[in-house]
Length: 309
Image (cartoon, rainbow, N blue to C red; front, side, top):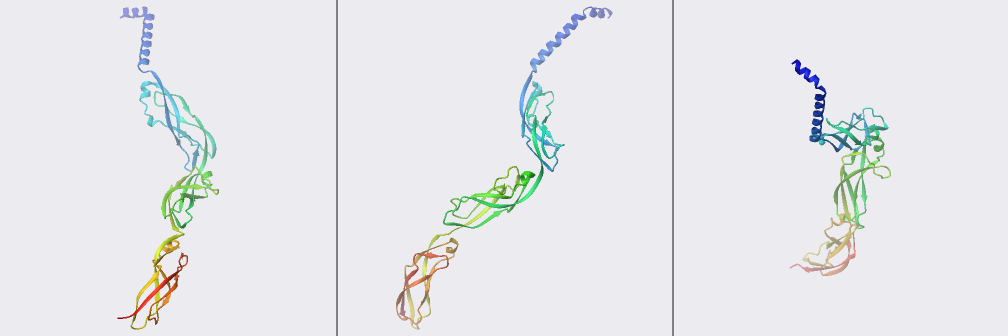
């Protein structure tokens, strides 16, 4: 034993040199088997510890992070769990410059992160209720009128930064009226606008959409209807009204759709047959409802009266 110790002491320099050489070789081999590599990720940014009464603007949705480390450590990274964050614990109203934080996975190191700092604006969280108004785009054809408009819902709630929400005067739903000739229903997005009609950005609207129901009617509509002779009175005993002829038998009337839909025919003025025992004819006026016109305002009526067999 003593001889071995003396022998080791005698050659200690050579042995230490061999040990160092072995370590260098081992490091070289390991570096070759598990080299240091670089990789870049797009990482989402979260806001942490922000007072619930505040909102913050200016924080990017994501940052670009470049990492380096041994290949095994890099390959072990799950990109889906990488997160950057901004700590807003000490946030105050107004503008501030804040840093974006990122903790690299075990065994890796940060080369760079873009951006590292951002200027943010902190504002109070505000909620407001607005009336929904219809804002038509274009116009209906000249022969069409808007009879009624209904919006569902009639009010919405907007929320967001106080400096934006306070600008909003009302909410609108926009509908294009061009070429519409029949009543229709549409669903559209709701927009918050200021008193000048400019869209207010950066606010949340609940609900996001509304339904608008337009009831349209034709101002000038043509309809062909039969003509009815309005006979009044009675012929003497022993006589009957055998036949009534008219020329023309029908005519075209013009008016609003709502009026014409309720008209099935047009009558003449009263034609008195009281005491009549023979045929007669005449040119008689027509009785037209208010708002209804026709190119023919008179009609020839021939009444045939014969003895009753």
